[in-house]
Length: 399
Image (tube, rainbow, N blue to C red):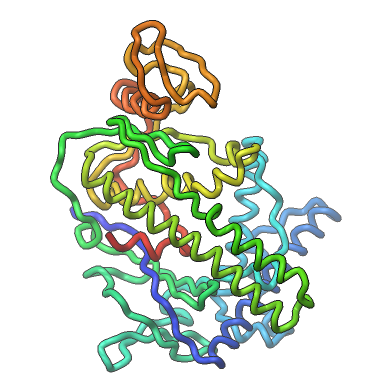
């Protein structure tokens, strides 16, 4: 029996000014509902030690819409999805408490920090042909919104959910699709080769075959322009027309950095998938690493999105295998004889006193990672695509 896969396709929306105002209003209502529901949970827990579930809050939506008619501008299912979003935030918080991890308590959302509306397809949102070979998106209380239809959906795909997101350069619609695997995967012929991958800051990636990739440092290159914009912004009247204009310019600069990073990693993931049947990487605790002195360059490098999302997804799509190994001591172990070779971070050359093996520090670590993937127990990800964030799904659907 042939399987199905859940993938996401993203398209740009071209709303009119009136439609953009209607979408902004819906985002305002969604953020207001989120904050109201969060406040209710906080007050009931503080006053009566009562935990409010999603079902209890969702049961009050009809009364809320009757007492506050303005909520009628947002689809009922979309309102439910706002409450589910809050419920997921509490679930992550409680799971972090259980595991003694630093997951913060859900916070109130500012108007400009709530950017996504989630719809169940067919309930307040539908995709229909525009009569000119393209498609248009019908949104409840918004109307028919033009869609930049730059690629077709996979054959046999069914739309399950739709996210409408406001980004720095406009509005986007992301479709969560359930499609036959053969329509979205592109299995490549086997090469018989395997590789270990070590991530770093001086060199972004080091491969076990000796290849070193320079760190592009996307954010660092844009810091000068960002600092100039921030200095000008600090002198403007908050909330003024020029202040809002500069805020949009700064947001677009950050968006450009993020897109450069994503494009680089997508191309890199496909290069690795074409060359190797098995790709071994470290199962790093990126949350812990990003809280130290090197937090800024680690965030700039963006290892998390590459190791946990982009690479596993592209490997699955290409019929390859990604293996996660224990990262403990990979840079302090000799890849040739397995001896422990302690060295400070500043020492970039690995020289083993036991066997004489000499290699670049990161290349040696990548060779250790590959050896562990071959010989020891490891977590493999090859059978199904990982869950994708709506904001990142646009780049994942192309090679």
